[in-house]
Image 1: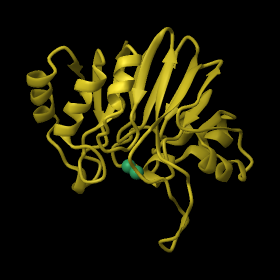
Image 2: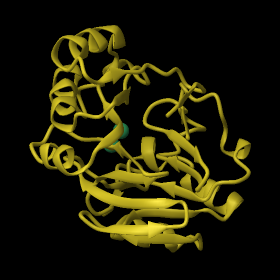
Image 3: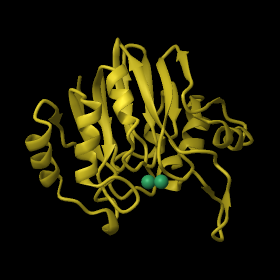
Image 4: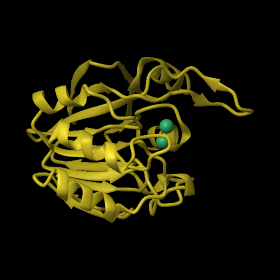
Length: 231
Ligand code: NI
Ligand code: MN
């Protein structure tokens, strides 16, 4: 399968089982090289939480493509009110879809949906996603701080790939992402959620060095927006 990075926390997964996009922040994403209208066929849109840099263009994509949005119950209810196809789930729950198995994991973060004037709709709890495709498990952590239950995920899932934030300030920084990698022990890690805005600037090579020193068995992969990695 092919994993394409679209900048920030947005990834696209193309497999024999379908095409998935996670956290489709495209139009206002300074890193993104694709626009929502570039996507003609998508099976599913996975949204980790209600913040605009993750919910992004999910509604537009769902309207254009008919793809199902997978999100937590509260965020899902909100999105469903716009007439798009939504599958609501919640943390700890797994569901088998034609495009793969999806399980919601905890994430230490908010999920308020900004509706203007500094007002938020309640968006439930932020989550991450375990995604089972072609007999491989991928983990998109969403926005999160480090938490010890990542150890459980690492123990119970033989992860091929982890997509972990390293931008610090709102989420894990490089040191905590390295600790997370130690607990998750995936074959590959792609760092995300950095360099999109000044407050989350990071030198990805420092992270790779840290990783090489502390978790040499995991291979760090740096993707620029628009680049793909075959796993
Ligand atoms: Ni967020
Ligand atoms: Mn974010």
